Each structure stands twice: as structure tokens, then as C-alpha cells.
Length: 302
Image (cartoon, rainbow, N blue to C red; front, side):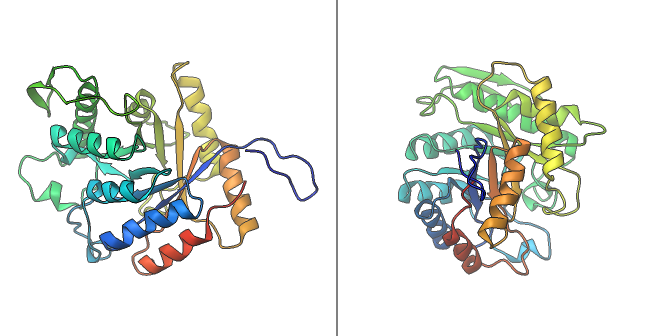
């Protein structure tokens, strides 16, 4: 998109889309938030994926099935991208995940994306269920195997899989996704001094990355513009080309002032991010009503 600076000169073209994360609220409030995102100019609505969190703060808020919420959101929207930040793939049975993905993908007309990660170790759906992968290494291996299974299922052909965590005989799903595949955005940890190759190489295999730096909270783990710039340079140097579009998905919180919000988003876009996801996670201050008010303000115009 092209805009104009205050001095009347043309801006350089900058393209970035804006999504909103429905961090808290009832199912009805989440669906209303998705509808408001479409009405007020946002490009995407994202829920989140947890079952029973062993945490005094986050555990006080109810959790809902993300695919049910996204199916409902798909029914009341026509344009916006839909997803969750992020799908905890290793604790899901791959055949059930594949059917859920395919259903929402077709219901939405191909608007689903799959931000994916290893899940959080405080979720009792890992720690209270025998046989679930719990160590970071095991969850990472399970993530890769389930993603492999999912991609095989999109062929529409009969397939089987023999892995460490996922072993199945013959399966065949009825048809491929609307666009042939559903974009997958793995979480990738970025450290400019020591790029963690396993995490980053996983993202390079797929369609985008949700970058994080090392931190003790969701806010601490958000990369800054310099991190995004260094990461996108690393991706350009290591990703096979041509390999199709690749999204860099940044999470943050924009200020209420529209000029300040534009400048903050523009800095991240200039660094190489293709998505800004408005991300409010503090359980002591974030309410469904505040989220809806923020959505109604709309995203900044770059």
C-alpha cells in the first residue's frame, strides 16, 4: 500500500496486514469480536488454544475449543483470515486435527491459517495425561510428525505414516483444502548471536514464522524491530527460492493515538513483518469489553 507523509511526499510502499487476538471472553463474545474485526477493517481474527492451564492468572479464565470458535467466526464473516495463536499441535491426535482443519478451511472458503507450536508445559492436557509428550524435545518431535501427517492428508490420496510419535495405517481424507493446502506458521525462537537452527529450520519448511525471543512472559518474548530485521535477513539468506510467500507474524500492542500507532506498525513493517497481531494477554487488565472497544478503533493506516 502507498501513503503520504505529513510533508506531502509519497511513502515507500509497505504491505502489512493487521489481525486481532481474542485473548479472553465467552464463545459468544469471541464470535462478536470476529464480526467486529471484519466490520472495522482488520484483516484477521485469531483465538488461542489451551485446555486446562495450571497457572494462577491464566487458569482463572475459561478456555474454549479453537476450531469450534473459528467455525462460528467463519459463519459470520466473509473476508478476514482466521486462526489461533497458537495451535498446540503435539497434544492433538493428527487424524482429528486434520478433520477439524479441513472442516473450518472449507467452511471459511479457504481463510484458515495454522500458527503452530509445541504447546505450553503448564497445560494439564500434557501433564495430566499419561503418554503425552512433555519434554520440550519430545513435544518438538511430535510437532514435526503431526505436521507431516497433516500435509500428507491434504493430498486426497491414501497414505500411511510410521514415526516415533505418530504411527498410523491407511488414511484418506475426502478432499484437499480449498487452496490445496492451509498455510502453516510455526513458532520460531530468534537469537541473533546463536540462531536455534531446529526451530528456524522448521519454519523454513512451511509458510511463515511466529517469531519469539527468549522471555518469561508473552510480552517479554515479543521481538523488537531490530530482531525482526535481523530475522528476515537470516530467512532471506537461508530459505530456498522460489518457494512461495512467507509470512513474518509480529505480536504487539498499538497505542491509542493513531499517528503513534501508524509509526509503530510502520517500523515493524519496514523491518520485514507481514502481519501485526494485536495481542493483549495481561489477565489482570484485559477484559472482553476492552478488546471489543479496541477492535472498534480499527487498525492504523500505513
